[in-house]
Length: 276
Image 1 (spheres, rainbow, N blue to C red):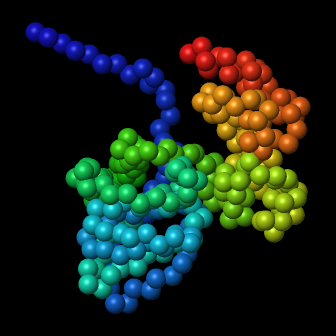
Image 2 (image 1 turned 30 degrees about the vertical axis):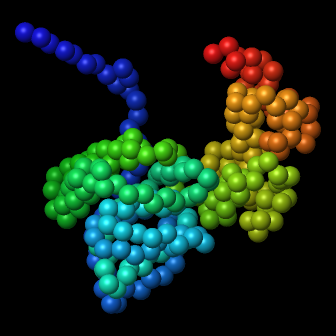
Image 3 (image 1 turned 60 degrees about the vertical axis):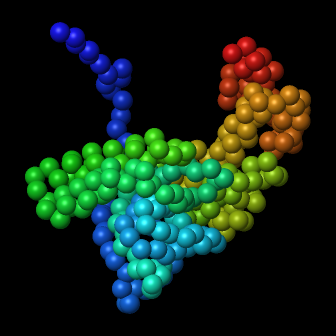
């Protein structure tokens, strides 16, 4: 008799820190009021039938049957339906997690027809558990939510980030973080970030650090160092050119920051990558 045994490599690995706030199942009606709004939590939006549009920030994105939308916390958005093909959808409100998408966007829409049955099982099961509220329903919903998120990550190109407390991430700090993500190679200072957010710079430091666990300037430096590492391992640009392209105006400050972050010089890092 053959016997194959598989053991966990790391049984102490933490589960995803996501918390399900609500499950909503809705269909379009004539009384639908489409209002732009934001949440301190993420929304996961599945279109069961029909078609419409998602409006997120300044973009309008078509929605159709089996489309899946993820909207990160603090993103201005709303959705509308087409009268000819009324939209039916399910929405999850999820606290404590946000996703990282290509292009520094804070939302994404993709079709999940190939994974439809599995995703719908998670949605309908959570909806049923929330309606029935039987013993341990919170634990069941948490486990279903974790399975849903892992399934999404496995079948797509995005990752997720943990945020200490979604409610603590102020809209202004979210704006500053997104601005840094998209413009880290530009000339950015604390005063310009404070002006962008219309906040006192000392209050910005406090709230940003409270929300993300790092000061805005240190976050900016880490983004620049991350870009330097990518360029060092994938291009033959000189170290001075890489520092400039990543937003460092001073070669000495770049050298100091890189060594502090990586524990070695940029030249040593490049050689280590080449030796792989």
